[in-house]
Length: 288
Image 1: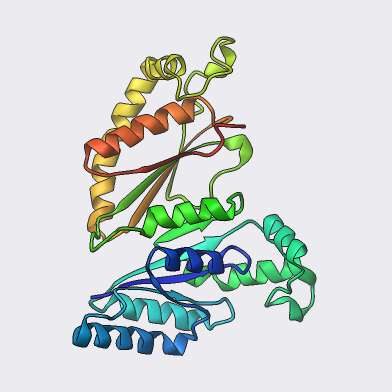
Image 2: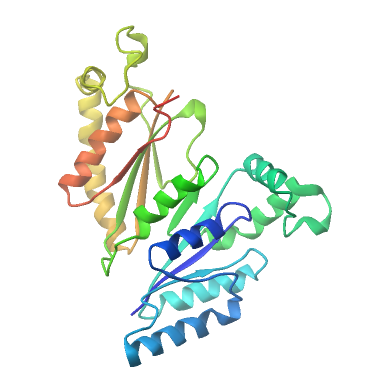
């Protein structure tokens, strides 16, 4: 059985960087793969592994947006019906960031020959990719990521996995005024909790500091919320795992992303650890 990762996503969102990062951690990567050859590459790798033990144990297939996306979806579903472990990574980014990237590199967008300019080409591609995006196990929004941060995300998700098929979890705190994360499964709004920002002594601190943490967690509303939310997670998390979900990402949002969401995210991460998961914790807006 091979571990197969199909990499797709918007042009300029980082497919090539992700492919390079996977190669660096030991994956065999085939870039710009025609959809019609996906099955043949997997078959060759499996046959080689069976004969010599030197096949592709971890195979990443990079599919471009110019491919027939309905055919990509059919091939993904066909592979998932096989004995292999198959996952789909979708790289996304907001339109303004993609326009900026194309402006700095002076490269032409692959769909920019149909008139309307770069923005229209990006939106056409976004619509074109919706069917395969719906198949994604993991979506990474690279809008605010440097190449080094993307490399770290790829390593966190795909390095040193072995044959462990357990569900990976991630918890992100964020501020609503900076935008909702695009690459999460569940978004929880904790702006109903009392805000430490209005306490002068707590304002410069963050939810990682004990005074803020205690202020947030000692609120009666917080205790009731955490109790009810954890009961919900006791049902949801095992259900997601049973359904074969490879990744579960939860985002906790407050106004600025520095106090309440950070403290609650740390509590949630602790709950996940106590239940046998090893969550990746990110505080997206803590430094703003």
